[in-house]
Image 1: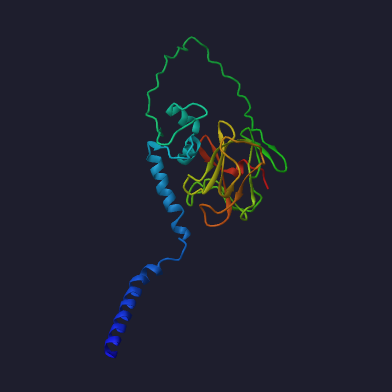
Image 2: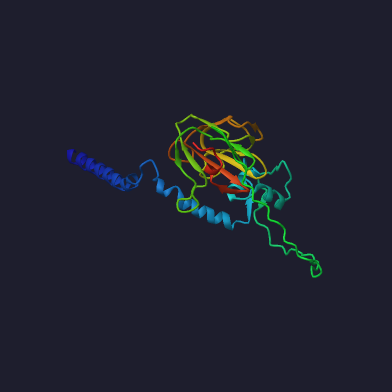
Length: 265
């Protein structure tokens, strides 16, 4: 009887060891966090390539024409014209949005003959420098008065090559305030865009939009009118590895360097 008990005990022991051996490789590879180098830029480049080749986008719940145009680097007004969407640019889930237009031949009118006309050289007008008004905390550029959206240290700058950064990164602690960089209208408030976490997009005029990403909490809603310097969110780490504010400015749908618009610190 004791021999039988010993044999059964050994059998259970061998089964237990086999289970441990099978599970060990799977557990060894899991650290709880994916390495940063495997998250960010390689996937972002593949995504950008798909975006460039895409001809249509199917609207998902929570998306707006502004967030779609932002995601594909398009001008929202051009996208609206292309799809026959009029202001206030209402779209619906399941709707197909064309992203590219077919090339059309432009009809040229016959030019008038200038044979009998004397060519007069027009005096060149002096080129006027763009109007830039500076104060301690505001700067007017592109007919928009800009100010810093957060008070933290600059930890990431705009770059269009290598480790691509479409804006700037400002360090902060969880819950610290995020302010609107200029007056405007909230055209997106949510978390539908890959890599941005909880995001706010503000429309300033026909040319300029600004975005505030990785927030822990959003304090505004879509279609809300915002004053310059108004608190719109709280700094967080959604969509990133540490608390910070990612801030972008888009001109006609294309990313521009925010440091060329913000007042100097």
